[in-house]
Length: 637
Image (tube, rainbow, N blue to C red):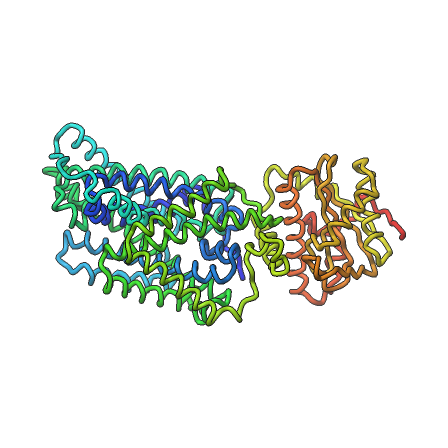
């Protein structure tokens, strides 16, 4: 499986999140929301934005720890296991389908302002066009996304300037006579759940986290900026609409922003509304296309993980998931034809609320699983309180949204569970980090997760604060003619003792204890014993080679990793105690280099398997030519 290029910066993250949010929620939904709660509708948007904070913080942490394509599905699967992964993957797929259908209905409503065409027909035609565009490989570039968001924010900014001036100076008729809470607190809370879908695009960037440069900084910062801008935009713009549009018109209006612009612009109404239509169309195109693009990748990713039939993993001639795109587009068409816009919004919001609740649970599971290689570049503050709130509040909002949203969400959980039990359970062996949480379930932990997280940590690259260059540059290699790991550890400990002044016997015992329970990465015939020790000033590496190899047999009931073949190269890492994040980043990096060297060796079998044993320092340092050991001493057992 190839890696995606990291070519997205901070503004790209901001543009993806903002562009995915500001569309239906601003151009289509305010009138429907106002019909439920009255003049308090801008407050409902504000509260929904605040309630997004736990999910945003949790998604940012997960995305910086596991920057992988697939986003929510990937997090749920690796944290909770394939059963919850199946439910979450199907749920995310359906929620994106509903949101895309919602956007296409909204685009049809705005186009119909200038051209007398049926809204449903326009939405279906646009679905077909976007389906075809995705099949042939045409998708929005990051540059186009930046341009669309810039135009959108500029137009929205102009609307706000005119709207705030009109409401403040009294140029527009203000309709304050309508009820603030049209249906009491129940109606207000139901509206908060309804408009929650307006913020669903915020975390969509997690699906492209694998392509983000410096994800530890750009993902959380971009998401925070995006949520701030979107919340202020929604609250202010919807407030203007609620004040200037007569209630009886607003409550049934599918193009409320255009109506408000027409009222505010006076003699310039026609060109001003046209500008709003252009901005709305750009926003809907961006959201709908990104929705099809993202949604089609979920069945594709699940098929690769054997949770869906392999046909969904078929890639077309243009390198796109053909079956996933077609299936997604057909379902969007069904949503447009069969459901009304209010129902679509409620169903999409209910699903997203459930998924956001599960995402917060994922953070708790990953942290309490105490996985060595779960090292997020951004850690959510106020843990675990904010995650617990982020789990419970969405479930409460689903209940407030009514029987339709509750039934649909519960039904989807049942369908996902039955699909896993009936189809996928016998095809997958993965287990989630949940099995790392409870010691009584220790025998069921999936050690492939540790390896996968270590590989991700390597791909992220070293942290600027890690002394990786100096550590690798000072690494030395020795050779020990023995078949005993105790002798290997003693030889390495003696080298470390010379360099650090620490007791060699204690160091040797520490490495042996770590290895006895299998707490070391193994790559082919190379192993990576490691330990953090009080009194070490900076990380140190010693490479030990054993010509005959060491057959390391570990108790399968106790060890997490059991080598399958004799080990001939041992890369010992000794780090200061108290900086586990740096220790495991360096460990992941050096193990990752050996995995890459092994992959290259397998491509050239004539070079033989000994390529890793003979060039350990070259692999570590990334040099093109073998380098002699810094201290070519030989220790005899």
